[in-house]
Amino acid sequence: MVRVIVGTQFGDEGKGRAVEFLAPHSQVIARYQGGANAGHTIHINEEPLVFHLVPSGIIYPHTLCIIGNGVVLDPEELIKEITLLKEKGISIENRFFISPYTHIVMPYHKLRDDSNHSIGTTRRGIGPCYEDKYGRRGIRLADLSSPEILEEKLKHNLSIFKSLPQDSANNLEFNSIYEQYLSFGKFLSPFVADTALLLNRWIDEGKEVLLEGAQGLLLDIDHGTYPFVTSSNPHSGGASTGLGISPTRIDEVIGITKAYTTRVGKGPLPTRLPPDIEEKVRECGKEYGATTGRPRRCGWLDVPLLRRALMLNDIKQIILTKLDVLDELPEIKICKEYKNMGAEWCANLENSEPVYETLPGWMTSTQSIRKYADLPVNTKRYIERISGLLEVKIMAVFVGPQKEATIEL
Ligand code: GDP
Ligand code: IMO
Ligand code: MG
Image (cartoon, protein in one colour):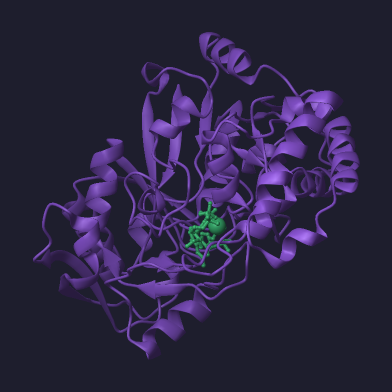
């Protein structure tokens, strides 16, 4: 069985936690797009760990983990994560594999990333690295083991970068980058493998496979709120191209949906909460970026946007996360529809007026509840309303950051 985990909102829905929940029943876990812009939080013995690149399932020693060709790889960041895993006593030898075709995030990508802050990116070099990929001049992981190829490509790319009017260009020096990236290549070489071949073989063998998307559908370069998006396809289709498997291999797409909406960086958020409620939700949900620490804007649950995410990915089941964050709200709203949202929905989003339905809150902690039947009646009402409006099955509800805080349905 091959299942894809897709964020159905603007990222940070709790995908890391969802992978942590599903990983015990999975044998293979693979990342297919994005890069170190992602921040996926999981827990080891109550301690939070944030992974930007390695699949979140790596903490389970029985899993085989892949970083696919669709990912843009910052070797410095990856080496930090590998070192951290070693410190935690998690062995990754012979169970962690990286595609030689991943494109490498270079120092000039980070310098060039959103330098005028018009998008509010994570400034991890993601957009510029994908630009070089599609411009067919990118440096790939395989190139870090070929000194001549690296020299040629690096000189070419540095000359392009230095021809642009940027103050920071003078700080970039060929020799030091060249030596540093050759040494990164050496460090990572034991993990380089034909991941597309491995994955196809493992699927043939009938292994349970989980494909871990980063970001969320509304940040998708094609289907999100362009231009306030990331530069890859978090959409489940990205899993096929980003790993080298046919779409026919994918059995199911599971949506990860936060019980409300958050957004970090710029771009429309029509259901944004009034300041006092937003502050409460942000503090209670610790809504600060796992990668950049920026405060996330918070909004009510947005059904029209979710319907779109579900339709585009053919999602029949979701995991509803962070329900406990709403525990102390006397009233909870759901945006059911928009007034005047036309065919070009994303361009009109800023000016469309959300139509809300108001439900009573439950005003009691749900964090220690483990059975659906034990939830307060108003909590069940909220969950059932979401399921009804979205016409989707809810597979599990998360009521706390720790993996135990799960209610399976
Ligand atoms: P991801 O990028 O989708 O993996 O999500 P992040 O890790 O960036 O953000 C989710 C945050 O919410 C993390 O700090 C998680 O530990 C936390 N979290 C996940 N599920 C729950 C939940 O059900 N309740 C609460 N209170 N926190 C949660
Ligand atoms: P995870 O995987 C939330 C946002 C940035 C910015 C926009 C473009 O943890 O859900 P980028 O650096 O990708 O060019 O920035 O996308 N963004 C995220 N927001 N979660 C993420 O990842 C994100 N990755 C990028 O804040 O608005
Ligand atoms: Mg995150």
